[in-house]
Length: 121
Image 1 (cartoon, rainbow, N blue to C red):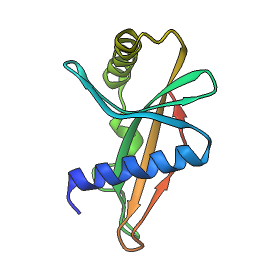
Image 2 (image 1 turned 90 degrees about the vertical axis):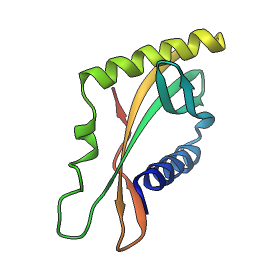
Image 3 (image 1 turned 45 degrees about the horizontal axis):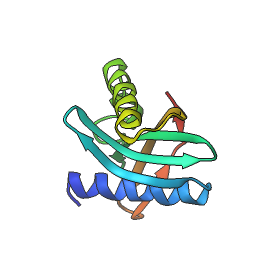
């Protein structure tokens, strides 16, 4: 599985997990000239902008390229806030929104994904 496929499958996994938690997926991979939002979901009256990071972990070894949480820094969080504001502006939403981070680990030997926990950022 290449990097692009791994990321796409990780996002699909997160979408299905969110739907099990009664989220409604509004959009995936929303793009504008300033960047991309992986998942836009809604639950009750709140919009959620979700950044997904997928990492591969082999048994007995550290995750390749570090842990998923390590991919999130101040600049990425700031950019996500700006993209969320732009999304609301373009779509004429005037709702409350939250940013969530979804760290996903893929275990190739078991061919399964694991969502650690949604993190509010």
